[in-house]
Amino acid sequence: MKNKTLENRAARFKRLFKKKELVTPYLAFVKISKKKMNLIKNHSMQYLSEILDQNTNKKEDVLLKYFGRKKNFLKNITPTGMILPKNNTSLEFNILLKSWYNAIKSLEIYDKLENCHTPAHLRVKWPTSQKKDLNRPRHAPEELHFDSWSGYSSHGLTFLLGVLGDTQKNRVRFFVPNDDYKEKWLLKDFKPTVSELKACYTPIDDTPSYGEIAIVDTCTLHQTFRENNSEIRFSIDNIFRSKIKLQTKEYIERYRRQELTSVELLSNLGSKCIYFFNHYPHQIKNTNGGSLDPTQFNFVKN
Ligand SMILES: [Fe+2]
Image 1 (tube, rainbow, N blue to C red):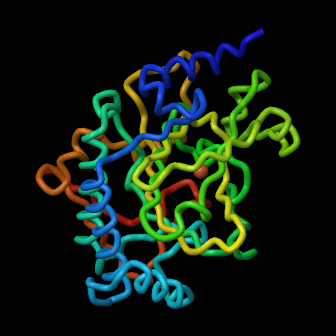
Image 2: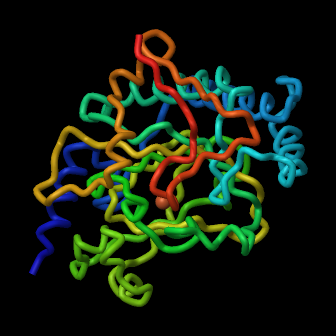
């Protein structure tokens, strides 16, 4: 017998994406223009340069090497690699987000997007994972996981875009479910065992080309995955909700619901709204054991 909830998720993906964009029924790779990709890349480099207090004209490989050397001195990076904007980089991060939402606006899917968990993140994945970073209150990105286990929407679409560095070998590995999939697994209280997950899921080794956004249905199990000799990588992640609804009940944790922001409003970042990141680099926000986003900010609407 077919799995009805998976059929419903697959039907939604068919309405959201072109056939050629679908990698699995629950995973799509969507291309953005070269011009928009270049802007995101350049603005990421400006943001990183400002964090490092360096000239903005460094070449990508030189800047990333320098960033790697400063690893132990940077105070604004979480154990999962989230690079937190602070009061010294507020402007540069807004500019990066502006180029990100401009790229989203240029996609065909834009009209079908309602809102997203915010703020979006620029994340660093170091060449190797460190043991101390793998013990997280919820789960480490290196473990097999669903993003809903962090309280995000169980109907979400995770957008992932490799921006700088080794985006091919230091990547995300995706898994496709079979009909034994159970919708309740998406809730952290009903986490299946690793062997149950492995019996239901098959790895997909496709990786988006540079300039393609991987768009991941919540039911797509995934993990941070580093091939041998991989190098540092930077990427953007942002979880969206579509206007096309699923038939099952949607779960979002209470605090995560407060993060939801209209995509239309964000596409006017800089004119109708702006973020103020008001923590000093050394200040750390209390996240209630991973329930809250670690970014301290005020979001101001015009
Ligand atoms: Fe994830």
